[in-house]
Length: 262
Image 1 (cartoon, rainbow, N blue to C red):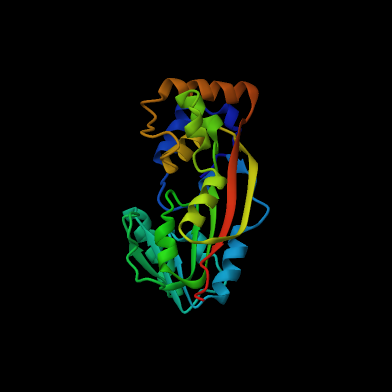
Image 2: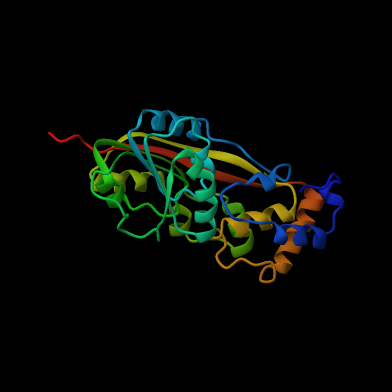
């Protein structure tokens, strides 16, 4: 997919056309290999998730995307269910997870979750767009665990503000881990672990930014190349003359437990 020529020698139109044609189904970012880098959180979410899944009896992965993260787990429990709302991802996840014995359920990502009370001893989710804490608490059995890696506040806001301009404080603070703690506890869950990290991210060409914004559609709502053509050309010139565009992702790990019945 990537050209061996230096990206700085490739034209704006070439890079744009390539990024517009790239498929964005699923949650696999391998198209960005060699075009962008993102520092990974120190805790290793997939390893932690895999460990928990290996000990679970019945587990639910919410907003599984294309199922790529869940499929990477070494062991799945006897009952493994995943939910996803976007139809192309539902198809991708079904093809990937059915051979592992997991069931993929198309779900609108609105309460209620289509499961009975206390149906699972483990609920997981990587980078959920929304978190319905009351529903997570409801479907967890007493003593059950929720494990999630989430996008934190002001993540990649260097990119967001390049296109949208300075954002108000309420936007910059959205998805703060302190709010996740509060909402989890309000839903009756006990926080076991909460960690936050700010991580270096670099985009090496404008095509990488286009692909990222086409895939992560909530970063710049309504993003299209036509709508932001002039700004994208400015970004191309900036990268060409000054080097990679630097941004910072934020991530937090949260583990919460539903209290056992007394």
